[in-house]
Image 1 (cartoon, rainbow, N blue to C red):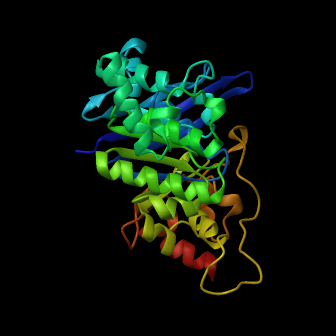
Image 2 (tube, helix red, strand yellow):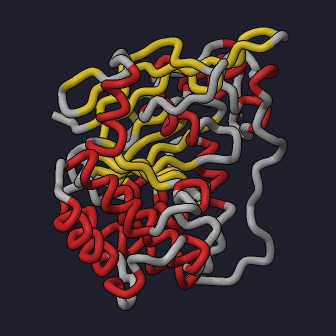
Length: 331
């Protein structure tokens, strides 16, 4: 049984111009100990999906449909006070900017200790001892001396390590990491990625890793979901998606990454831009930018379907009944 099971999730934002659908019928699962990467351009719906799972959608945004199951229990219908106990204890969160997570008025030791006292019922002495161990585990040097320091006394990379400790110290089953390395230097990024992988392996924690960086995904994830305009365009094992993409959008993303094996004079690029939520076209949302689009792509919206590999892709090119039309268009 998957640890996290998201079924037909829909997130809406009512506006004066009408209702904007930010996440549209998204389904996926994550197994215990697995890292699922979620990748796509800005505005694809990645962060909104993560925020919906932990019920941190800012009003007037709302979950308008679907179900979210954690370890066999439905959590999207829990009352707010019950959800607060799930958030932190069963689901940890790592955000892009550590300063939005850490309270500048409290020492990092106090923040770690209070989290463990709240969710694990520890006494003050045991919580402080565990806080020191967590700081050591995430690579904070001289943890016993620095535990009483404030967030502003740490560098950006060290603050992000503290945030990882804060997300994991209550021993959650699932961690949602939203762009956890974007604000860091490349060398610190590599350290944080290695740390996240090791902690998840050691503690059996499942991770939803949200990023726009395919390099981070390729290095960290077991599977990857590629999002476009609020929907999943392709999902599958990370190696297959990187090496053998089955959706034209994923092909474009992979073509924009410079190869290490040889020099290229010009990288591929995807023409155009992702549509605004107010102007998503009929049919496949990618069809105005797709070099292989044919009539059905402009008319009918594809669901995720089987391909000739382990990936599933929301593309009519993989539907047997559309193949003749697609080949005729290509000819």
